[in-house]
Length: 234
Image (cartoon, rainbow, N blue to C red; front, side, top):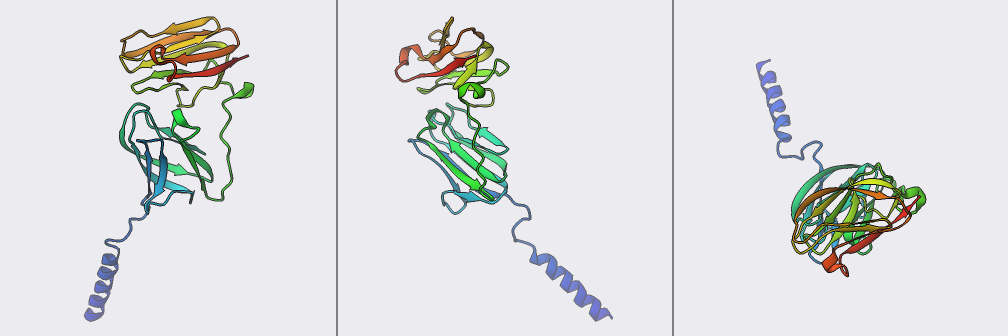
């Protein structure tokens, strides 16, 4: 009876040791994202292969931003995360991906720096349109106008979505002027305001857009390179 008990004890110890050094249950799969220093943006799996399809689940993404003029944004079902424009470095995101299509872009250069991948069954979920009358944002939306520190200027919602169309009304705009050599100007029918050189800092403007037309944002000294626009609609 003593010998049997000793054998059983050994089996229990061996079974316990067998689990040591194995994969940790529930460990998240690893992905790596990179943007810059040129006009390149990538998302790769642990083997270094470009991501085109993933299983639903939770992933850890190491995001490396190698240029101040770029950022990295990942959006899709349940996810909309981005690095801060004008900053370089590495950060790690933990995201849960569901069935559908996800896109990753550099916001200022989304037309040329972008990619996508499918999760699960591959059901495509197109991103909501930001243009047109029905897609125009309203005055309830807080906006951010950012100029610099590189040669970039952007107008976005607080959630980081680029503004391409907005309805008439009075908006709260947080202006972030990040360089002594740049300024930030908003100009629309009936409205024209700018920060001054060499101001660096943050201001909050109440911007009243009473008429339809075009809202333009630019840096005065570098207007040829640093500019953008959005439509103002009823």
